[in-house]
Image (cartoon, rainbow, N blue to C red; front, side, top):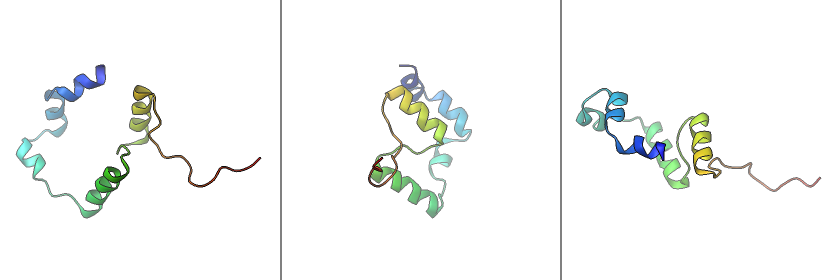
Length: 75
């Protein structure tokens, strides 16, 4: 699968980060960012823009975004 190749190569990640890994990994995150990561970790839902999540859904042929909460309306 094409998307797996990207995950296994480090060169594209180094271009995105554009800094030494030690500096990137030691960067202090804001409390709100940390909480957002933890929320998505707890729910198991991917973190990213809507277009990114939709692409993942297409690749995986599976819904990843939450459905509307509550009971279905009777018609």
